[in-house]
Amino acid sequence: MKKLEPFVFLDDKQWAPQWEEYLHDTLLFIPSKIQEILCITPIPDTTEILIVTDNGTFINNKSILTTLHSFASAHCYPDYAIISDSLKRLKYFGQYKIPWFCPNFALFPLESADQTIWLNPLKILTIFKHDGQYFVEMINGLILLLPISKRRVTKHAEIASLLLATISRGSFHTTRPGTTPLDFLDLPNTPFARYLSKRPLLQEFITPIGKLKKQYEISYALYHFPDLIAESDEDYEDNWL
Image (tube, rainbow, N blue to C red; front, side):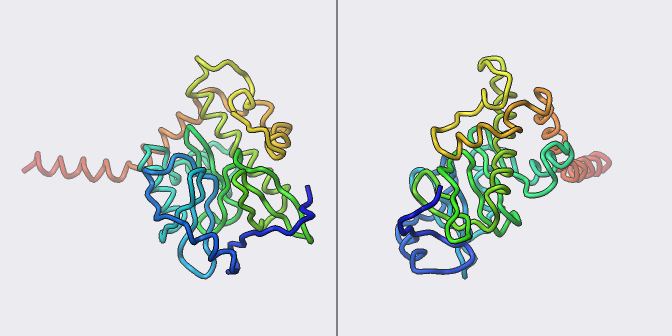
């Protein structure tokens, strides 16, 4: 798809007047008030980030990973550090640009996790090329300049969607019939979702039911093991005394 008419877009690496206009109606980020995130983007020339949702836009002065951690904690969702460790240990989903996911949606980074745009794959309307550059349009009309090609964005979106389907299958395989990732995804009727539905990774699961959940539990235990050791040592000293 090629945009023939003039359009307004945001560039996460360069400040422009449209940023000021877009930020005019933003609210302060309160994790518990947000249900699903469409995208997160750094705001150029600042240390702040923009969180875009179906119900408005929010601003936060914390890093993206800190913001994700706050959001996950507020909703009792998986922690990104543990997700990253789990997926790297499984080796099925790549070792870099690890997505974040919860039971309801997923987000994937385009470049370095803490300093780049994060997108919700099922909230992408389309990706198009204009004057030699790629842009993504979200379902709410927001257009962002992409730092990477459509092919690479699609690959990251494919992996994030597969993870979301894998989590959904693990939670609902006894009540939701299906055998392929597409059976466990609620794909919208958008150009990008239709394109995504034909991608090879979404035609067949690559892990057995429960394998990802089990690895997350192992990584969770390992992540908190130093704290458990410290508590155990304190209890031992108290008992010894």
